[in-house]
Image 1 (cartoon, one colour):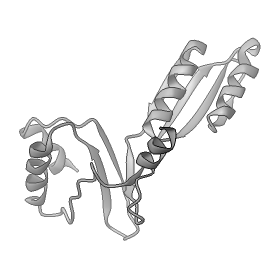
Image 2 (image 1 turned 90 degrees about the vertical axis):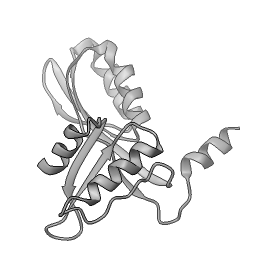
Image 3 (image 1 turned 180 degrees about the vertical axis):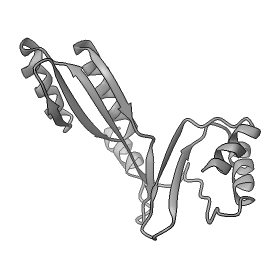
Image 4 (image 1 turned 120 degrees about the horizontal axis):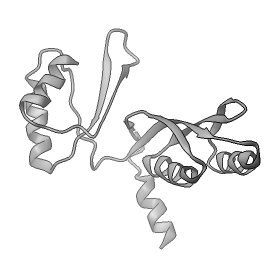
Length: 156
């Protein structure tokens, strides 16, 4: 991880999101990065990453059908008079209440980045005390079906 972050720092590449975790193979970690840039930038990053010894595979999934998710925890001001409205919103978004106290509630919301942002925007007026958000994680779809494209076609 330190070599990868050093590579990005030396080359002045920005990282919008970074998630690291173990894979299905012991001793192998998957790093998922969201990097802004055009196709040339992505190709340059890919070439640089392959020069690192422990990098086994680099895959650009920008245009590949994939499942993307993020997780966010929010500590929200939750006084009694607002509690039922807040719980209703949490339920509408299929989020979970993972902690409840007299004045605060912690909600866990998982989904595509759009859902995460929408939830945060609606909850904002209750008073967000703290937020912790993971980076985007993703796996390519074996079916090769782009559900976002199908969803957009159905709306038209």
